[in-house]
Length: 366
Image 1 (cartoon, rainbow, N blue to C red):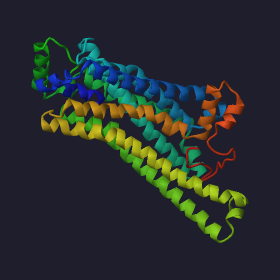
Image 2: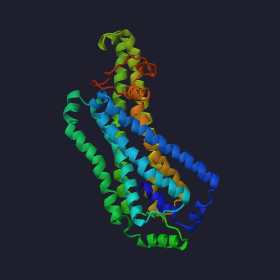
Image 3: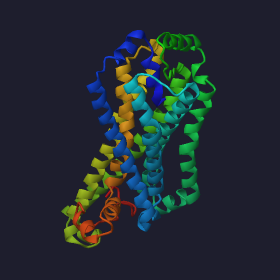
C-alpha cells in the first residue's frame, strides 16, 4: 500500500525521465533530510520502548502496552522500510531483485498498516477508560483482551500484505499494464520495484488500513471530547455556585487547574486527529483514485504523500508519549542517567498533578 509509490515511479517514460532531473546537490540534500527523519524516528521510538521497560509505573498502565507495540512498529518502519525508499528515490532504480521487491513491498504495507491499527487501538482504549464506568473498563480491558487487540494489530496487516502481494492478487485484471511497465523498465536497462494494484485491492486494503480505523478513531475521540466538555461545564457550574472546591477534593487552588486539564485534553485530541489525518489522508485518497484514472498520478505526488505517511511514525512518540508527564520523567531519567535534579528541573509543569478527571482516568496526556 505505502509502496504504491513504486507503481507511479514507472507509469510513463516522462515520469522516469523526470526522476533523473535531480542534480547531485539535490540528491545529497534530499538524502540528508530523509536520513534525519529516519534517525529521529529510530531514536524517538527506541526511547519510548526503553522508558517502559525501565519504569515500573509505566508498565502498570494497559494503554502503554499499545504505545510500546506502536513504537516497535514505527521503529521497524524506520529500519526496514524507509532506507530502501530513500535508496530507490535517490538512485531511481531497484537493484535487489524481484523477489525482495515483493518482500519489501509486503513489509511496507504490513508495518504502516500495523502502525495505524495501533493508533486505533489506543483510541478505543482511551474511550473505554474515560467514557465508561471504571468497573466496565476493568472488565472489558482485561489482559487477555489487550493481548487479542495487540495480536489483531499485527495479524490483520499480514493478511492484507504478504498474502495478496506474494500471490499477486493485487495484479489480477491489470496484467497487461504490469507487463507494459516491466517491458519499459527492461528497455531502459534499469530495474524498478513495480507495484500496481487493481481497484478491488486498493479499496479493500485502504478500507481496512485507514478508513475503518479513521471512523473508529473519530467516533472514540468525539465521545471523549464531549465527555471532557461536559465535565468542564459541571466544574464551572459548581465553581459559580461556590461549591466546586468541596465537590472536587476540597481544594480552592485546584479548581482552575482542573479546568485547564480539560482544556488541554480537547487540544491534545485535536492534535492527535489532526496529525493523523494530515499524514495519511492524502495518500489513501490518492490510493483509491489512482486505479480509476489509469494510474496517472505523478510520481512527485506519490513521493510527497508516501513520506508524509512515514513522518507519522516520527510524530507518534511525541503525540502518544512525549505529551505524557510520566513518560517525560522517564525519558529524563534515561537521558540524565537517573539524576533526579534534572528530572525535577526538566518537568514542563509544576510537580503537583491531578490524576482523576473522568472515571478516575486523566483525559489529557500529561
